[in-house]
Length: 460
Image 1: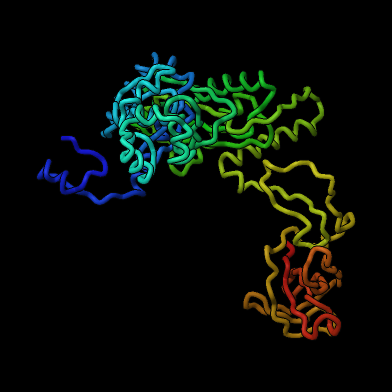
Image 2: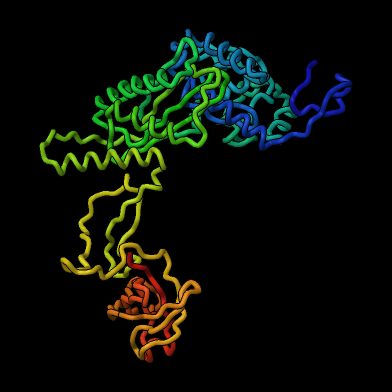
């Protein structure tokens, strides 16, 4: 029907009187093109978005896996068309030439080094030029790419700028501008293509084990181990699902890789749905590090450390790395700044030792768990320059029977722009046996006339 993009609606309706018009939804279109890009990852990890409705695939070294460039091109077009989408595609030695050929000569396969000849007869609108440049070229009588290429570079640069000349050189194959893939490229990967789509969990698990063995062989040759792994499952209907895991140290044990992915798959809120089956499963080492081989030891402490590290990886795979935390000491005497909870997989040995706060066979001087933020209390009765006798916290009144303290802590003035009041900490016990860790924020008469009281933690 000769309908084209940017055609006036009146002209389109003149050709097709029953034309159905739907308002464009750019957000939905963007999601669709991203899903198609995910699906195209099965051909190459070098997939880039080419707004508004295009994709660029760097297929260097890929065609031989699919029977050659022509078979690859026809296969991609047929597979996308099978999903109910209209598609145009072409293969050329650079992105600019491939884009121009795809839009104007669908299905073209430009021979290496022949890009200039292939696009010479195309109109200048086939290139990504701004409207002012297109208008200037048309006024100069330059209507095809070949006509523009026949002019000297100095003449074109003086009239239209160096950026336009660079684009022309890229399209003609005289210069190169690499594409930027939408996903970070993995350090290494292995994949398994199936002649028939697979749906059973046992086959998927065996495939992950086999891919793990292949990947670890690659990593072993490079002297590396994987810290982050991603398994991609490509369904026959075009849907793609990616599952990732992380490890506390460099890993290249295929059996452990399979078990960690098993934990992750079992914990998914949205289970892995094979649909009509997976025709491709890919395992990527998204992040690899140097692998330091350790000799086998009979020391029980070393074996315990290995088992703990494996347990942390399993828990992180099931619940997420941010939910498995480890406390690390920090160089500060302020209670809330003396330690930090960080993901256990990222903890490293530190020279800072934990400070012992109680002698053997002595009750702890501080609660094991403190509040993220100290909570204010209302003091109902108190001893001058001493602990409260009665206080209210969380709407409940507490009468103090015993108290120990104070433990005076001065703030770190060298880390604060404004001076912070001194704290006096007390361990108190109420008439029902509940023990609290309270502090007074400021000293009577010296730093404040009416200091505030807070509860910083409770003892078990």
